[in-house]
Amino acid sequence: MLFKYSAAILALSLVAAPVAARTPPPAGIWANPHNTVHVTFKRCRDAICGTVVWASRTAIEDAQRGGVDQLVGEELFRDFVEDEPGRWSGEVFIPDVGQTVSGTIT
Image 1: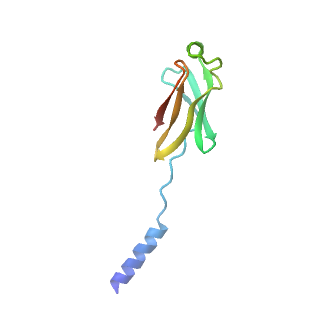
Image 2 (image 1 turned 90 degrees about the vertical axis):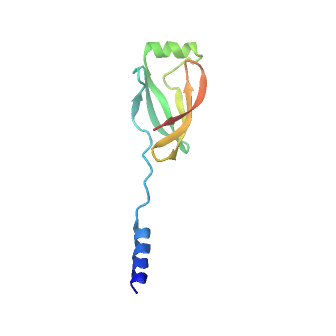
Image 3 (image 1 turned 30 degrees about the vertical axis):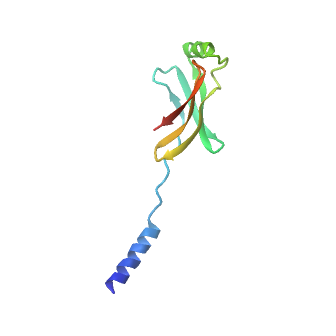
């Protein structure tokens, strides 16, 4: 009889256990390590994207040499999705070399 009650309690505790919450997406304004570019993150389609909201004169000139006319407003982080808790993966556009690479945010 004790086994039946234990099994019932275990079953109820499994049903009542909270589902692991997903990590909140990147938010706010982020700065690169040299504080020459500031990016804001927002939801775009079914993912997260990051767009330049401020850039230093040096960063703007570097981007222009890479073929980007307007760095402010450029989407640098594209289609980032959470592939495991606390880890977001997507594409990163590097304006000063004009290339897109895979990247992660943790």
